[in-house]
Image 1 (cartoon, rainbow, N blue to C red):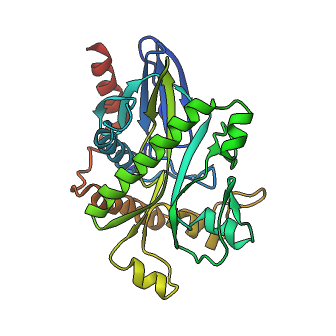
Image 2: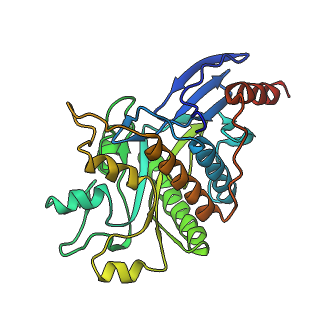
Length: 314
């Protein structure tokens, strides 16, 4: 089995810092450029799992790159180039300290919240009588704070503005961009026989200009259903066939892990790891309509470093 890339520790010319996130290693080059390496790490319930997933980083990076290009007419984005299948280089932005999550359906954590009796999600009132996987009359925004460590926390629009995390003026723009991006993502997914169920966007600023940053419409940030059997499955009260990493969360929950204190991550056998890798590749091909071409597995770290250095030299 291909060795997964679980960490990089490069030192580039004019490098100010490196941040190792849950999945990405982000290099600050002179506070002008960001070099983002999509590793093969995988997280669930805000915990990085002990084994990486081969080709996952390439899948995420290439999906995000494609969809950043496909939405750049809606909002400027941070991407400048993809010098390697696992790397994007772009503008250094000051990120807003929130994630804009938008949901078209009552699924996943929103369903778990609803099932527990709550009828308000991040300040948005939700009616009684809804079923799992039901489409909302219109998509709802359920933002979260961005935690450096531990769990991201749900927060309402009113709390975001009251706490000064984002100005009212900027939040209005973020909300508008989020709805337009989700609408575009929904249209693109429909062309591929998919439903974009929910997703998250992150934004930052350079001066007064807002940019879309990080990734977009990947299996780590988004959930998709297959559209052909959605209505039949919903009417029968059956689970939807999903393309997302919800299957990883479900496997963990079935084995007694939800990221809570004292819980142990179940053993990740080669078979489990290979199965997750295959699902990510399936998702890439379904979402993009392109055949996935596996990048070379030889000297991956050296290849990435060389490709980044060549870009920075130009």
